[in-house]
Length: 549
Ligand code: GLC
Image (cartoon, rainbow, N blue to C red; front, top):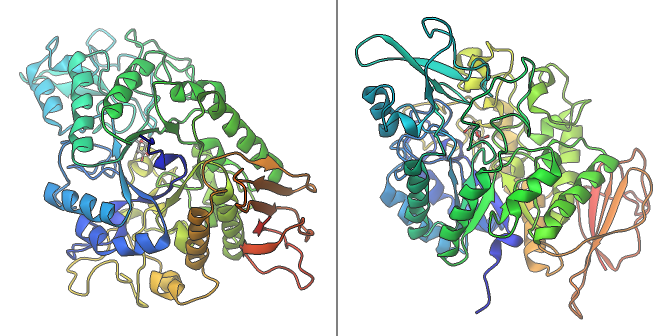
């Protein structure tokens, strides 16, 4: 039987439920909203949807604090809604990928509540990282690790008898206690969760914070100024690979299911280990997402990404933005076009040229969709939405904002509800009968960026994405496969995607990141361009073209 390798070429839409579409008028997106817009995604031309966590959650970290990994957040709907959605998406030829969050639970998860109640040295506490504090009365954290969201990575509990008690580890917010992956219950639980969702028809799992799971049980201090990274005792330990080998065995017992790692590691050799045979099918590529709009830097990242995946024969993932980073239109409109989590707090102080950012984002979209492998589109990217930098402080929700005392603006600006139609907020995000405003305010200028407005305009971002996705899907040369660089002037990226099959046309992609126009290389026809060519047929700066060869 022919193996179904859909994920090697797929265009995947990242859907952030809270901000996609609100079906019941409470100002929060939900599964009813998604179901009523599935035809939009089918028309856009995506092959799969990745859902950010849709489980019951107190929303201390926008759903990445899960209190029941087998349910659906009541504000989003019910398990029956999810089942119906999976069926309807499949009927449209769209696969479903969901987030699984193995590093941590919610502090409202029954296991964590039981652990607090059971007290020190209990089997219930062994599922997490409870430790006595340091100092004579144990009132200092067990070690000096810092939370990735700011502040200490430990919080002290009050014991059932009311006395000040042990501390528990949380690499993210205090409401996100870390699981102990040396504990057999934890391992068995997650394998069961995978089976639960694969059994319901889910096609893939995106593994959240995939390099963090296992920890050095000695919990050693780190040097005071140590940034999280591959040699930090909580990142990328060898024993995490045992976990993924067992997950792969689970995935392989269902047809065509896929494991996708969110692995933030700058070191390509370390990253490559996650796609070794018998482990994950594919891993996200954050160096590409962080890369400045610079031809030499992009070429280097592209080559490194292909090289790291090559030994395992894994397909690369290309992604320009997601719910954790600034929207690209804003990023590319600043003087510094790189993205760096540690520097986000400074970016928002710089001016943004939205017209330039949009032009570059269009060029980047065509560049990205021409690269070999799969591609992710974060909802709203196809509309050219920008980072909303002026959300009033009292409406901000991201724990990063609070835990850094407002120094880091956090991620709310990329999570603002989508504009669908009309000329006033909520722009069709909520139904006319809505009783609440959208959970984050939408800029009034988004009246020009609604789905309705962009569908009616020939040169909108939406039309570009639609055309590109349809060409990409219909072309045997795009998606999975090989690429070959062509000689090109400084600041220009040019490469061929040839299918190898006799009689099937190839695609030649040229992206001009230099400051002047460049001549097009030989071709038969222009398939698609991110902006108009010059009057003499040359490729202007910040423009990408797909040529038929
Ligand atoms: C991942 C998610 C992010 C979340 C964090 C903790 O990086 O993408 O949104 O806050 O993990 O779960």
